[in-house]
Image (tube, rainbow, N blue to C red; front, side, top):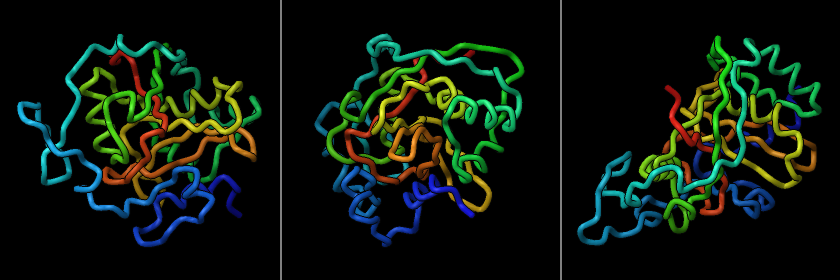
Length: 223
């Protein structure tokens, strides 16, 4: 029987299946609009970058990542297996959905301990306006000096963030991982009505998000 947290995976159902009204109200937006409607026209003399779309994307001018303060630090390499992580997460009082667990089995854990700095940003914080795609968010963040997180951050953050306030959802900006029989996924660290969970969200490049969606990025690139 699936755990209740697995309802979040409705986010990556095939295009054309509208989400329930309550999910739509919370900003779970289906990628139903063409890319041309969510990408701003390119003004003259601006840098250009191409992604999965045929027309150019306008990205903010690069700045150093120190522009964004460190939100918190997390330790990586504390656990060496998914079993150890699941036990630690549940002992802390949080839970991990079945689908998030299947994705976690694809995570490679480092042998050495490390501590990394994380920042939390929205699309608006890095210069985007209105709805945007996953690919555009990652490209804009990179132009601002931010980096993708190791996938382990999703597990580590869930374990090491017990004070997460109810109603907060943080998407981990990571290389999308394909779970067992499911599409590309990103981890989501969330505190909802059912408690503190590690979920999975769509990681396909052209999935559309609202501008207020909050993302966790790496502040300094790992060596």
